[in-house]
Length: 640
Image: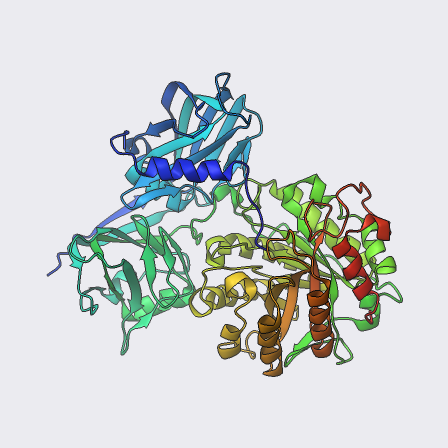
């Protein structure tokens, strides 16, 4: 769902536009091969001790820390701020926000993706208290930007009195392990040939120690002789050159057609096991346009993390015990239909008969108790016994609003998710574990997804009622180069413990581009029991969208509508019962499972519960919104 507008977001945008325009505010190849082994070590340094009062409501105040202060930064290093409340703020509103940026050559890049203590991230850094300490543990991409461009802080409502950096030279969980950094090319090649005739080739022997998680780092600057666009492409050579895909980039984003659009230097590509094998056999060819490449470094050994999270977020499943198979509750949906499977375009029950799941989606479990309070046994009893549903979707955002990878309390969030699975199981419901990628490339939180989903899949391997949704709404993420390779890595992590579990894969553009997997599906022999996501909001998505779904399903694509609304795509306004009814008819005609957004009392049209209602279960029609009543009446007509 296209939601989440942070506090004072308009001010942030205005500040960024204003700040980006400022200057002077503190702001034939040769091979030069060298190898450095990086060992574990920590050091703390105070880099600022004074007072900067962020009291300008237009966010004009800046605090800069020079790049040299971050020379030893790497993934897992930390920035710690000591703050107090500003008493001189002149704005109309009273709030406390900060943002971290690197002022790169190509514009300001916000530092996000790491983990916070003493604050949460909700479109800005929101301190738990204006008088306290905030610590941010950086990603590998953050560290690279800081080492090159330093840190710029903007914000409002607080006074920063001290900044301390803590460096961690190597973030492997094993203290004795090493990473080997090898510079394999150092020169200057201006890729200014619009026909892409220029390239750098690195022989296969240089990749002999490469494995999954190794990295190729490219240092670059913008070309002054080719300015139409910037792009690079990583290929393995062999008899024909083949682009390396499926891994993850930091410092750039994948293009919709091929290659990567570099955004900051160094650009780093973390390889898959298949990439590593291809490089060890065939070597690397780097080609592109609009950039000057100055250095290529290979990083082998160490962790397989893509750099999208701090080392503190890394977990294993070694201490996770697999629960015994629960006893089915007679007369419930799971007792009647058992373990599900996928055949052609259809979801089937254990008898081989077509079966349709339907029910409510929670709002974000990480959004606070106001939203997670509906995960309780009495609520789920109401959903099954009174509303006739057979499924619940448990939503966990990796990023938004104190998400799982952006400072959320991981232990608490996992506990809520696991409690939800147990409550659903006790009522004989099916449960959809939703890794709620929202408006970004799922590769960016792939490693965290693998760790989280592996733990859930191992613990609940014997629960036949658990399904997995591995990326809710990937956006600007081409199927072939981003989502499909992501699924090909994530699904095996689940299947090692739950080999027959149904897995649902999101599609590009808010999970609506279902034509892409129709033309290029995951291999059924390797990735069986897979379905593909489509989302609709009835007032925004009408006949043409229904035609797309009907065409895809008629062509054999198994579609699961893991999220729908009765209103505008924003989630607020435009309640449309007639268009909703047309969607309900389509779902019934083609046996398409569908989950309604959302089981919450948030003051928006999409919510099922009135904002004035304090109940967390036992709702009657008077407790429900217009949308909630329409959806519940629809669910009551279906065969559970």
